[in-house]
Image (cartoon, rainbow, N blue to C red; front, side, top):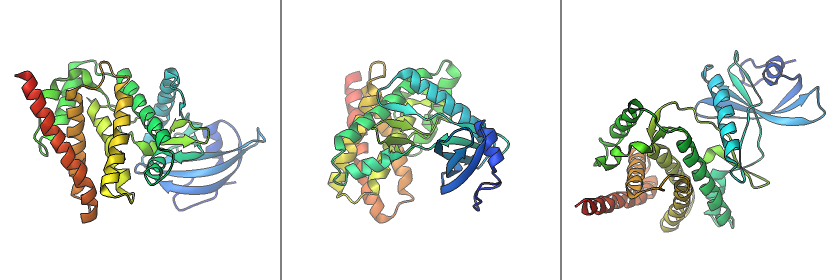
Amino acid sequence: MKVTKTPLQANITLDDLSEAMSRHIRSARLISTWKSRTSILFRYHLVANDSCITDDAVIKLAKESDVAPLFFRSMQNIAEFVDSLSIPNFECLRPLGMCRKKGFVVMPYVQGEGLDVLIKNSCLGDDREAIVDNYIELAGTLLGYYHQRFPAVDDAQIKEAQSDLETRLCDTLPFDHNFACNTHRVARSYGDYHPGHLIVTKNRKLVLIDPPLSETFTFIYRDISWFCYWLLFLFLRTKLFLSNYYKAYTRIRARFLKGYSGVLSGGLTAIDRLAIDYCEAFLIQRCLRKCSFWQRLYYLLPLTHRLRQLQTTNLYLETKQK
């Protein structure tokens, strides 16, 4: 008996599911299908012979078959790492199984609301503003712990990070080499860390649903600025007036940086914040090329503010050095 077919589902069968989960799956009812940048996801209602309990699961079918083992291993590792931290109200999904020959991973389905959705709702009149701020701070705390756990340990990794940062920024913004000397701020990149990969459950726990897949070492500012850029992208899709939108974005961004700085040795310095502003301004400026006129109105305000911050910080640092 095969799983209900869809055009995207390829040739996954009940036998494949049973093998992946190490238990006999009697039936699987397809509930929904959606796509991500690197995979196709199917939500199923599964019924197993060895239990009267039925569960929902998500099958993550990678577009490249060799990605599935990496995803499975990374998800297990980050789950163990999160458990070792014992952060209150923070959890990480553990994979249920993997089928190497078909290139898919089975994950438990989490009922809840995406942190990205909560952020948008809280800025459109929702009364959960304080709750959202706490979740954002937790997200910053996890990223800070991750960078502390996997720092650069040799000169080759540090040189790789410096080269990556200069290549990304030199062609777009006036580059300041002050923060390129902060070798202690190099760590393994998390990769695609943003609010869409965090789910808030009904019992008010924040759950991480996507693992780090990057093996490269880079400056910590790259991951931080990517998360902040995603926050900006979320506000772009709201119907707030410009002043309200930027005020909300600035508040939430500050809470994320507060959570990160709280676990970083010595906190975020003036040089660190300068580097974050550089990286985020670079991302915004790159995005401007693809935006419509009205979208640019939303982006130009934070970009102008960021560039002013850079000028002010540079003047402060130059005065301090003199």
